[in-house]
Length: 467
Figure 1 (tube, rainbow, N blue to C red):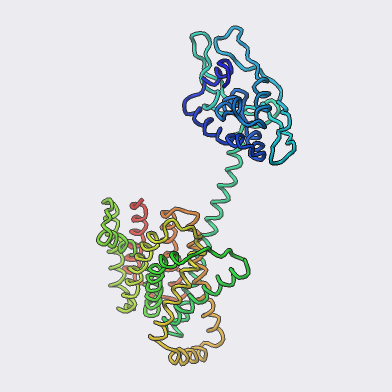
Figure 2: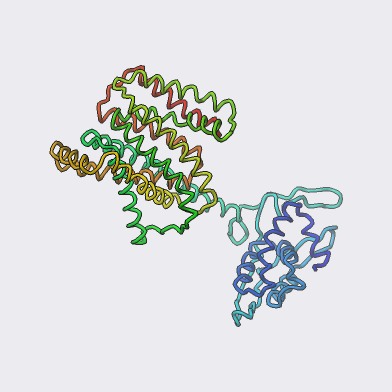
């Protein structure tokens, strides 16, 4: 081990700082195994430390004595290069020296030298390392603040790290902003085309099937052409995904049935009540408890939805129940997803792709039974005759945009917190309601608009209270 004089400057470190050094010293443990690449990486890292800190790390890693033969020459030369002056001070201080150029490190694996150079440049920090109090006699003198740059013009590591982190954080925020804008835009477009299709072709089971089929085809093509990396799945993955897919299928069909019967704005006003279902299901089925503000936030949600429902000019019970069933189904989808998919490393995009494919297999036989090819053919010919070729574009657009907006929403979950996602979902509903009212000229009474505003405000309060 090192002598007392060599260790003395290190005694200025706090316990936390020593712990950090000892933790980082793990990088040098590979020296004992003679891994040449790891030695080079570790030695380059040491170049960021001051001399006393380098000795501390080398000592903690067991390199100065008992370490690998390939590491000892460089380490001992480093120790010899540190000069301590004891004149007029109780605690040795380290003299400044030029960068140390170490001899080549040899590795039995590589069979050749690797020339490395260590710099004596210190790692400037305000508190850690050697920025503690310096003792002069019996009086403690605080260390001066670190300079803005070293003598050779190099900036402190923290400043460089902060400068590098700033563009990264800015890029991340920009990426999230793009996700949100794309998510909202795609959702608005889907709802518009979906309503146009349902007005001309009122068969929600087939419309729902085409949406899932388009998404499945897009992802299969992406995996086949290597545009997206296919996920690695097994039988357990698909078993865990099955209840999620069943709930997703029910919620998707119920929402489509609702939009076939009532205005898009009304469907989304009722669907803004989903948090109330989340709390009730979690409380009575799962035994979860929530703080009082969460329960109070349900009052404006339930009251707003009720006010909007009783004042809806074109109220339809089937449409209302479809939206309510969709809320309940999506709550169970989220619960099953959290429980069954915990610990499985599948990206948001691939997760939704697998969910779409399994939901398609579940939905197809029910769609055939509920409506059937004969009904579809008759309705299709009628819609094409009334609308013209544009009807084909409407069907394609609503199918593709359904998949895209859901895919982007699942991808955004990889980047943001559940709270941010919940707020984004609330804002999405506002954009859909406003856009549909404008495009379809939906008549809205002031009291109806008030109910919608109260329900959406309650959803926002819920998202804040739940955190």
